[in-house]
Image (cartoon, rainbow, N blue to C red; front, side, top):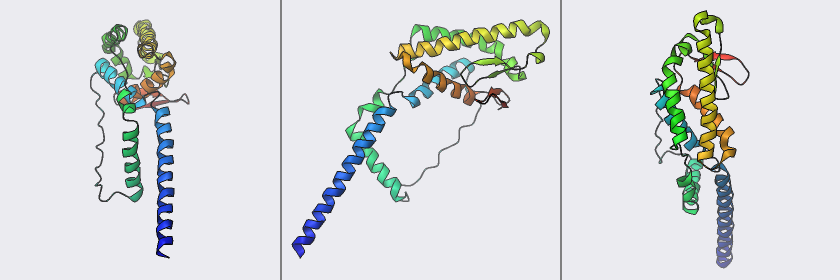
Length: 212
């Protein structure tokens, strides 16, 4: 009977090991897909460019709460163990997840937008212009702009949008992935809003304007 129990225990261990291996392979496949477009790296790159153009954000970043590993739930411990296996199996994935924003074209576009930021700021502050959900700017309330300044405001918006469209395209091309342009645009659209000053307007996907 003791021998039967040992065999049963070994068989169970084999099943458990096989299940862990299968789960890790499945997770590895998911990670491979997710790092195809390095979203986290793109957000960091966008924040660097936006900070260069607008200056540091005045938004307060919430502090993450630390949790002791001793009090972590069982599910968290299992996920941590699986992550350790994944880090061993695919250590290069996260290292290669990067976005290049150092090309001369990108630097020139960033400098152009930085030079325009001071002129756009009063229109953002007054609510005359706002940020859109596709990473551009829009003249939100032309009537709030004195007639003498309206053509200037329209030109600033037009020039800004031309630079933004070119920026998203150049970042995708600089990283040898022209197909990333829409992902780059979407990332920047979110980060422009996240870094916007309090009181500025942004346009939701539904078309409604919201004041930050």
